[in-house]
Length: 99
Image 1 (tube, rainbow, N blue to C red):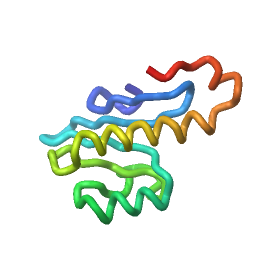
Image 2: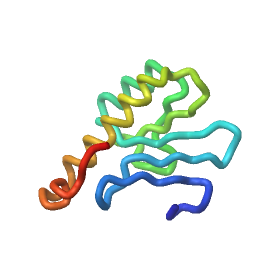
Image 3: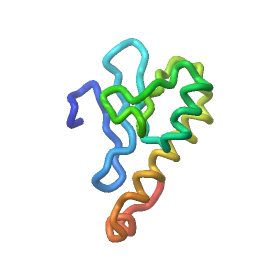
Image 4: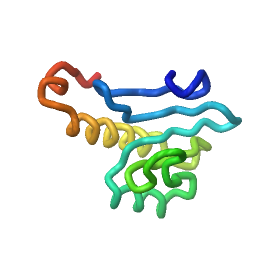
C-alpha cells in the first residue's frame, strides 16, 4: 500500500497494473489501457473516466457503481495486466505466472 491504507496496489513484477481506491462510498479501480481502447471505454461508459492521478492517455479509472458489467471490468483488468507484462524484461516476465 505505497499510497496509504485506502489504496490497494496490484503489480506484475515491479510494475503496477491496477489500483483499487476505497477512500469514498464507491470504490474506484484504475487500470492501464491502450489509448484508443481507453477512449472507447470512456465513450461507452460514463463511469469510466481518465485515470485519476495517472497519465490520462494510458490509464482509466472505473467508478465501481455497477454500471459497467463485471465481465467488462474483468476484460479491462486482464488487458491492463497484459500491457504491463509486455513492458517487463524477459527475465522478469519469465518469473511470473498469470493466476
